[in-house]
Image 1 (cartoon, rainbow, N blue to C red):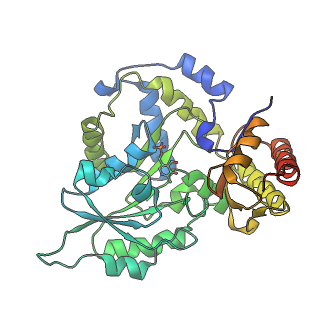
Image 2 (cartoon, rainbow, N blue to C red):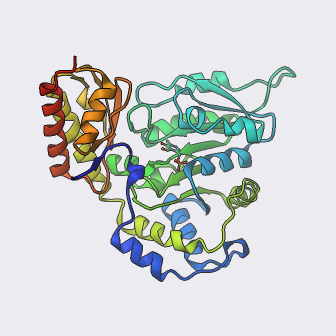
Length: 346
Ligand SMILES: Cc1ncc(COP(=O)(O)O)c(C=O)c1O
């Protein structure tokens, strides 16, 4: 049976070219700074992001955590959106491991923070208050629908951050989706941020890995914190080789994922029993509500026919990625329509 897995772009497997590069990678011990393949990947990432240096971590969560630890002191506070991945989905690591207090402010539908609200959230110098040590944005914004912040959006928050001498971090797990959507070089898009994390293991199809980019001084601190949280590794070239292939050949094709997500969203909008505004999803994530029947049962029936991605609640998210083309989208739409129309489970 053909499996079409919409659960996330994290389910992607390495491409044949990645497997080849991994097999042939020149290796060394990265704890000695000796892995030539990893060194190449970090240099390439820094150059592409327009930053001076980069450090590899096993996951996006660790990249964000290490960024927080490197920017903040214990007892500081960071300002993030109330729907940000850092706040909702990273185990509260900033607090548990960094002693960093989190203040959330409202994410609008575009995942944006109002610069004025950011400024009001910055703590004045007062014995009662923690010190604001970091402001973080997310781009693309996952839980707001894979939505995109522009360079101007980022600049408007960066101006506030700079005025108050507070660093700005971007959780750019899917920053290349944003840059491809905006047709803006990623270095331009993030030029006002002090640090940016991005993932190799999502739409770029690598099995493992994330990079944190910033100034040399910041990355030096980040390396220390990566070591502290157990993220120092040895012959990392095995996975870094896939990352180089991704950065050299997998970015432009993200536009295909966006086009397939659009095709999916429009198709879903024509199926009775689905509530969706198909115009809300610019990149590869499509959110919708299922009203045709008990969601868990619909999800089960779909999975029986090879379509993964349904949930137990009525709020569903389907993500397009390498391995899902227009044909897979059309097949999934037909299957969903068939199940939603003909399975009398109301
Ligand atoms: C916006 C965002 N940031 C960070 C992460 C964490 O990445 P990882 O799963 O590699 O820890 C994710 C994961 O989906 C994400 O969507």
